[in-house]
Amino acid sequence: MTPFEAPSAARPVVGWWRDAVVYEVYPRSFADSNGDGVGDLEGVRHHLDHLDALGIDAIWLSPFYMSPLADGGYDVADHRDVDPLLGTLDGFDALVADAHARQIRIIVDIVANHTSDRHPWFQDALAAGRGSAARDRYIFRDGDGERPPSDWRSHFGGGAWQRVADGQWYCHLFTREQPDLNWDHDEVRQYFLDTLRFWADRGVDGFRVDMAHTLVKDLAAPLRSQPDLDLHLPLDGSDPLYDRDGVHVVYEGWRRVFDEYDPPRAAVAETWYPTNARTYLYARPSELGQVFDFSLQQCAWDRDQFVAAIRRSLDDHRIAGGGLTWVLSSHDAVRHPSRLALPVAVRPDAWLLSNGTAPHIDPQLAARRGRAATLMMLALPGSAYLYQGEELGLLEVADLSPSSVHDPTWERSGHTVRGRDGCRVPLPWTRAGTSFGFGAGGSWLPQPATWGACSVEAQTGVIGSSLEMYRAALHLRRRLQVADDEVEWQDSGVGIVHFRRANGWECIVNMTAEPVRVAASQVLISSRRLDGGLLPCDAAAWTHAG
Ligand code: GLC
Image (tube, rainbow, N blue to C red):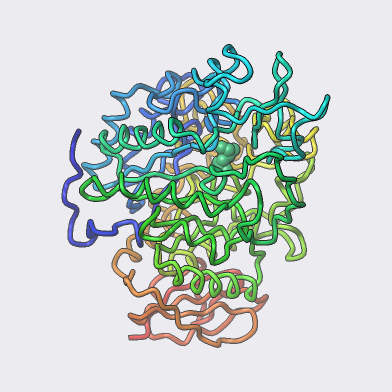
């Protein structure tokens, strides 16, 4: 494998991830090189120049493994091979080599809570029958008469147990095509250590650990009841399924594997509960090093909400001594410009929950707030995760017809949860042409007719465009980012987020309805043009005191 070349002085190898800007590629929707309507790894390779010019440090590739696509690739049938729809292992190696040649690192997804029901292990478990060693790799149980073994619920709606032909049930926290693995089983633990080595040997620089907090469950008989989870309350370690203390032993083992490599491989945990000090335990240097902090995704366009969330995360992360991360958008969330244009009283996940009627938003307002929030996030200490298309200012696609919806949540929720397709619509690359340059054969989800105007081609070189703002901000950030994690809050009045970093770099965000005076000698960048020293509403600026 091509070893990662020593990066320039601007990007030190040791702990590169601590302040990295990582760009999530959802491969099926990024670019399609062979005209079959589905994005692929070769499509990513063809567009590395775009990512290089953008100024990112790493790409996180969402799953590209063998998958029957019951959950957009998060149902993995072979963790060590590329799905033929998306490419080949040789193609993957070429992508890693070409990314490394541009000093862009590659992070891959590890989906360890469950496999696909087509995984050979699960097929064996079905064939081998009750009481077999093959069933022991999963969570098979007898029911209570005709009832499932416990009241556990699936994230995508409905119960978390599926009955098989011989009457036993198996647990699935997601779709029934995603049976949960038994992490009390040595073979399961070893399989994932080997999988990490498989990809690390191929040159990947890091791992994004899917549902990191669910692997270890309390499986002692009788199975404990699942408490009524309030998604807005942090966990405390007492739930039988989530965030159990034992899971940290797994990640200590993974860290030992990461440290076999030079440089050590990086990792980021995904945990889906409101961030608290426990969340950051996954980021301890003895474990994964980073955990997604999703708290910005919970904030409406409200100064106090953002400041409270940032303060809390800064405090919580210090306890664990690991990395700090920020996320505004991802393949699981409503695109942040759309979300931030919702009235403060509306839940930020309202879109996902709505049964087909999207809340109305003003697209101009969404564009302004989305860019301002991005400048705010990029000025914070730590690492920032971007999601493909956010550099283009794409909004959530709100009017996908039920017949084009792919997300399993739509069916499993009995058509009450709309799902995540609205942020997964294939990217527009060109002003015109079939699927706006996504590929020659159309796109697997329909793109809005207006998307040519948001394309990379339409925005390149256009001052004031979203793309040029992202490029300028990312390049500036490389110069400005300091290792110091301190944020000094400035009191600039009601509705104004204003903080200063150790080197005098300041970020001011105007969340009021009026323009606000910026008292700084130097404005480095702003999301809307300043007028006579006034920062318009719904805008952010970076300044320097010096
Ligand atoms: C994670 C992924 C999500 C997937 C789920 C099940 O939350 O980000 O897309 O559906 O895990 O693997």
